[in-house]
Amino acid sequence: MSIQTILKMGDPRLLRQAQPVTAFDTPELRQLVIDLQDTMAAAHGAGLAAPQIGVDLQVVLFGSGQPNPRYPDAPAVPRTVLINPVITPLGDDEEEDWEGCLSVPGMRGVVPRWRRIRYQGFDLQGQPMDRQAEGFHARVVQHECDHLWGTLYPMRMRDLRRFGFTEVLFPGLAAAEDD
Image 1 (cartoon, rainbow, N blue to C red):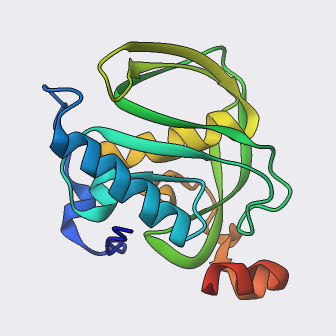
Image 2 (tube, rainbow, N blue to C red):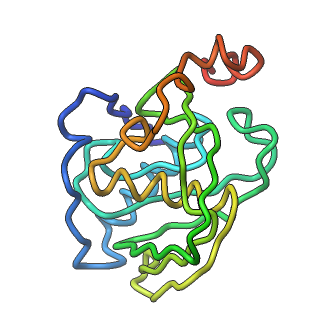
Image 3 (cartoon, rainbow, N blue to C red):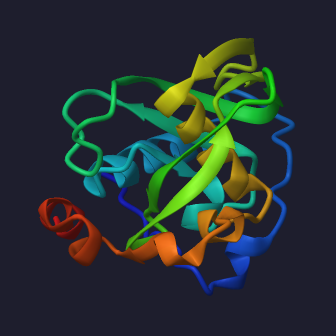
């Protein structure tokens, strides 16, 4: 296991623009993905971006089977490594929903996101990826890719009255986040 420390909001490294990956399927990139997988699993995350563990590259990992204790009602999202992503909204429809973040531990907030998106990029081997997603899947992709551009979910919130501690807002989920 190669569990890394997850940077927390306030660390200036989380506000930087990540650099594009230029070499695929290298030992270093494979190790980064292993680090992301192990760290995300240990934290019960639905996704994790390289900048969250202090690596300044455009690499995200997302996806979770059922059940995920931090998102018990969410549908499964296929485990995906996405490198150098581009996100395009499909339509003008937005959805607001609660989000948490491993870099903003113990808190949740209501965040607007595009309901349907197209995401493109590359897999670990450098093969092109082009997918469409909606609902929770689209939300997770947008959330993780925001980390590559130095954006944390509270920066996207429109109403801070819907931002607070998980243990107060959702007492049943607080134990899962403390694991």
